[in-house]
View 1: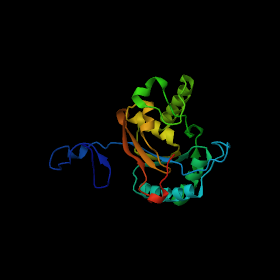
View 2 (view 1 turned 45 degrees about the vertical axis):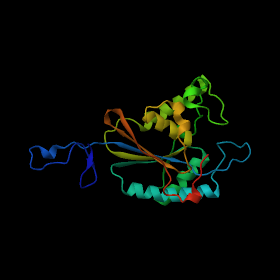
View 3 (view 1 turned 180 degrees about the vertical axis):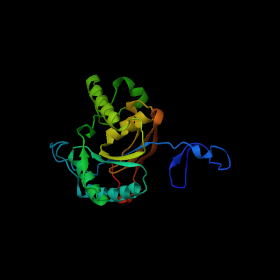
Length: 231
């Protein structure tokens, strides 16, 4: 099993016996650490749409606390810091900007493919996954567009690692849930079985040999109950 050495690095295999020959040749396991943050609470004003809707006062408070939690996580992180990445949509980018201020980081890398994606509801798989209340069924074309975007995100962030690194991505609930279902080898239609809170923190790790692991999901421990919202 994997374990940590005195410096905190993950080491493969059982505890090292320094009395045995070749004991110093233990293999260090590298991984990509992908921290996914859903945007904060936002206001849906009329029919202005996703490219306009921004954070509410509540969402900004959530983002501040999230930035402070990320500062703790990054202070303890190992490996190369790849940076802060964000969806271009205002509610995610504003969350990233507020968190970046708490982190004392000036640059946010905005990626157009990190915007929200459609919820996949397959009419032929209702018996397996049910129907999320109020959502229409997805056409084959809509599913293909959604899957193409998920694959674009995975091509960028989920490659087999050559060194240990950490990336923080500010994005949206559906995309986060699709990345989680893929890591768990579940159909994308299983997304609706996962709730996703505003400013919840999810962590996935990618190891060599295309092994992926869910480390935590939708962590809201940095938010008091009065600041936890969803939908």
